[in-house]
Image (cartoon, rainbow, N blue to C red):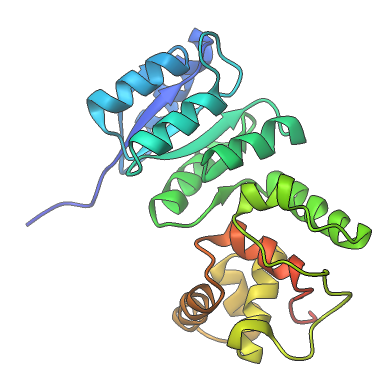
Length: 244
């Protein structure tokens, strides 16, 4: 009989005390095995080649090779390894280049063990592991571009995936695009509000399994791969959630 699946994690951070602290924290979390620790991006790429971890927790500002370039190289050479950025910085100049390079999660270093574990689990399952603050910043950026009448394809589309061309919708759409049902559009809008599957289920008075089915269907219809791309799609089409 096999035991529960273990997620193999590599830590990359140039500050020794921070790196060792993260390794120690991860060692206390169930279902996570730390397979290596790197002091810069070059070492991170080399250790990924050697150990093939499931997830890399990646700092951004490191010597020799920074986290953005290391993320780009890891995602290009080892697509089975996901990257979650763990950094002090949540400004646009740090956030969007990291997402465009292929990071599927983004946390700031004030994140606790539970939030880190959740982000690791999310990216392993194919979702995006974004902290609430980062998700809010992404929504603000997309919302601001929609209000300004810009597409944002150069900045946000690369971060959250491709978004359809055309003018942004001014408000909630009467007929959902791409064959979405009204309920699927409603679920999509709630994803864009930052709600989890459990919270969406509560809001709509349905089971989490039903929510998951709607999400699988809407992902297939819209061509998005994860929640970050779903957020971009929702804002591009003016799709909002249900009233409370």
